[in-house]
Amino acid sequence: MMNHCLNPVCKQPKNPEGNKFCQTCGSKLLLRDHYRALKPIGSSTYSRTFLAVDEDIPSKPFCVIKQFFPPRTVSEAQKAAELFQREAVQLDRLGQHPQIPRLLAYFEQDKHQYLIQEFMEGKTLGEELKQSGAFSEQQIFTFLKQILPLLHFVHSNQVIHRDIKPANIIRRPRVSGGDSSSLTRSDSLLLVGFSAVKSLSNQPTIGNATIIGSPEYTASEQLTGNPTFASDLYSLGVTCIELLTQTSPFNLRHGNQWEWRQYLSRPVSAALGKILDKLLQDKPSQRYQSAPEVLQELDSLQPREWKCVETFASGSRIRCVAVSPDSQLIASGSEENRIQLWYPGRGKSGEQLGNWLSGHSGWVQAVVFSPDGRLLMSGSCDRSLKVWDLGTGKLLRSLGDWFAPHTGWINAIALNSPGTILASGSTDTTIKLWNISTGKQFATLTDHQGTIESVAISPDGKLLASGSGDRTVKLWELPTGKAVATFTGHEDMVRSLTFSPDSQILASGSRDHTIKLWQVNSGELLGTLTHTDWIETVAFSPQLPLVVGGTRNGAVGFWNPYTGEELNGVQAHSASVNSVVFASNGRVMISGSADGSIKLWQAPFSTTGGG
Image 1 (cartoon, rainbow, N blue to C red):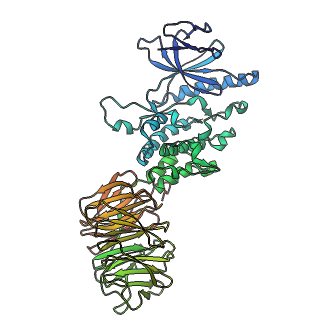
Image 2: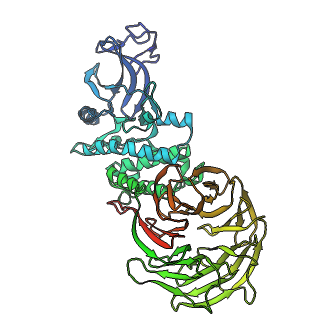
């Protein structure tokens, strides 16, 4: 193992093992007759860092030498030396934490100050990124939950790290003979790179010496010499998007905007994206202000328990439910050909739309609200599509004029976000597109070979998805109706479809007991979620990283679609769950069942009100 000369002006610092003096400049190679430098491992404005061994201890353990060399002007050199000494004091205190290197010694030799620190074994996250590729959402969640308590410890000691980046975060080696749990244990990450730390105690400023850190990770206020705790959180956000994209932060920022999503190899949840975007805000006041605040937000995204808070008894088998945009009204369709309205928390419930003359004469298979909540559309086994005025409770029109819009049952309907296009799917194997303002049909889609069981329109309004008894899922452009993709893989009919809030993922639920997750732009199958019975209905939460599936046996399953983790499910009903929908806040779920009941389920809110 080579020796490395610590003389800053030595032109050939590498020396053979066994040399006591540098063969180039004659400097003594053993620092304080104690520490032998092996190789440089880092540098900053006024210091260099070396991997070293402690020759005084029989096992010759590794350690780290940090060598300080001051600015040239006398006044700045004196202040810089004072700061270096204060840094030693900070490290002495911070090093009491088992995930931060301990300070072993602090001294001066040959007119240079030195810090000796514990060597932390493992790979940096930068090295891990190169070797293993981009992190998944689950890995980012785990990383944040591991690193944020450590960052909170640093901040609670009134210290700003100022150089958070993948190269300064080390993962401990896996325990010999251990399993993968050693990678997710709370203490598996180590924080190093404390050469840039700033104490918030009253201390002198040495010109530009306080503008420390790696530029691509550094917040604007830190670049002007005014870092705060939120500056570290900004750097943490940059670290996360680099780990997710495996792309240099320099390439993720265009002008004043972070544009990291386009570099993802697979989508992340809107909820995680919102957290990262807040970490990355340019203005410190618009960021999270503390590590615990971010942790609380993360915890709020993964509710473990859903509780039934209200039950409505319909008296007939429920086929479908929908919730109004303001979450104040629920509509249901039943096998007794009725549409009923329910008012959560208000007692007034169960009123019926229409009568024997204007109402449906077959099962009501699908209902959907208009975006302004004033209209309700319904589709039925009687082959009719109806538009209702919720202000008057009256039928506004039936689509298709004098002729039935389909020759078979209408199983599913979907409305685009502006409320201008309605799609209807039928047992006649066709999908029809309707102009809501005129009531006219403008396209018929005929590529499926089986009954249409489900339709969904992406939140961005660009795509229609259809699921069929032919076991396929098809994507169609809107408003043209052009077929653009077919997804295969289900082994039974596709009963339900739902898009993620950002339109990037499509979930398909099937009677083959699975929910499949498809990346919309590539058609890649991202994962398969399994249950014990037929999946009759699926829904994405609009706010949480959550997809749910209602089953024939009355259960509702919950999964994180971005990690594949199965969460705690509920035995929601005593018969098939035929429909599930979410209120706009994503924390209230409504389920409708063949047992004749409609139930409201609520997830606990965090103390930050994260929903």
